[in-house]
Length: 309
Image: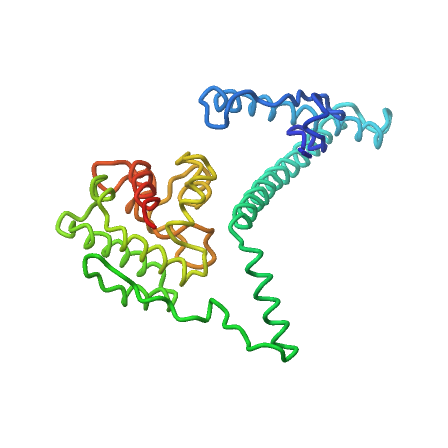
């Protein structure tokens, strides 16, 4: 795997290098799991050292460049040092900004690659091949044209407790994602008979009508073309092995280490997979929906969803 030296940004192979070939920085991987407190404390301390080392490296590079362009005798030593300091500070600030932007871009690309990998795991390639074969036969006049699944009428929603899903389906069909999420929460309270209380306990989620849970998931999945839904969230949850913080980073309920508020959700199809609906929390992603935490509510919700046939 190709990485970049945090000091001079030189590329290196993680398996082959322990020190940077350009600046000599120690490239030994940091021990411990990504979520361990010891690792985080070490990385925080190391970042201070990296900033200092980067500045010293830049100063060294600038000194060498300046000496080459301005040999002794062309100006007084103090003037040359002053010019060097000003030029160094300007270049250092530029490079620091560029490195920060590059790190953000690499982190974003890595995140997108992980999402693509997760998505491809659920793609039914044999089915796609079958449909393409049917389309080819039809174009050659040897078969009846197939009906694509996405153009088929959605199934009639079912409910164990008499829930009417027509308003939710209407909102989703029109792309009114925020109102649809609010309607989903209202349906969840009604299905659990918790409208008066206005929140759901873990027991409510455990006893949640399974038919209605499956219907909610199907409706969200259908109208978002597989972008949103409870099972999409569950697949991501399994990918991160039940780490709530990492899960929230993946579905953008936590951005740059900040837990987002409900008003900050991205109510559009531009949002990342699994961003909606938000049933485990309402006010902020690090809060719960009652006496339980958001993490506990999410675990219970997924446990109930696994029992749905």
